[in-house]
Length: 246
Ligand code: IPE
Ligand code: IPE
Ligand code: MG
Image (cartoon, rainbow, N blue to C red; front, side, top):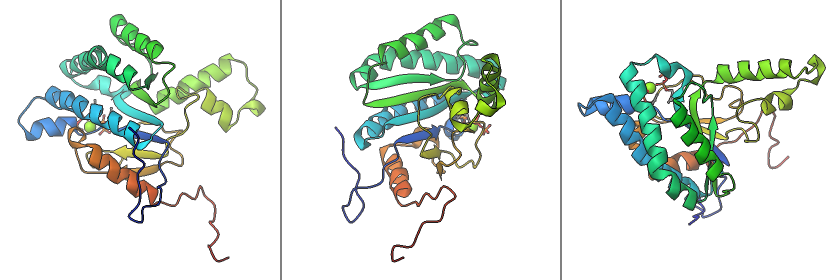
């Protein structure tokens, strides 16, 4: 069911087509409860289900979720293994329902370093959902913005492009996000005010929303608040907006 968000005056609101989320704060959520960090990561998959449903409800077209960065390999081995296991579990348990909801799954980052069984599961879920149109959920897993740009430069060189042929659009088409519009709104939970190597090219003119709420506590209402806040922004893209009465 799609419920168009409205302002207090009941006029239709400006909804972001693409929301990207840095899902941060799982460790602190667990620590506050005296639980192991992995319990926080697990809790962070429960509310993700609610957030995906809410995106469908609000008419969002793309949701990108930052779930594992290229730097996260540096965490203790049991946490890294646990996170890989959680991804596998989520695919096993949620894929059919996501498919039924009309969700298309996409991956950004590099699969090479993952266990071959997990790689295959990710590839299969992308294949199974490739014709779905309701919402594209783009999972950033083993993703790093710098790694993405380095990969793009290498492939541009390998393809023999001349310097004068390289422009913004060409670079965008060599990124992992090829074909996906830039995010309109980036949400970071847990209060940190940094980009942490996420979508560093694509975020050039994104609007930011940072909330102190830890990721496992971020729910439909919090998402709605972020979208309403976005609807009140004026995006200027470096231009001057003429006054209404001019
Ligand atoms: C985000 O939560 C999930 C991943 C980075 C995988 P964290 O694990 O970073 O949680 P905090 O920041 O330590 O609370
Ligand atoms: C960013 O969170 C990565 C993900 C949410 C997957 P981190 O917790 O890894 O980032 P830093 O260390 O606070 O910058
Ligand atoms: Mg963190």
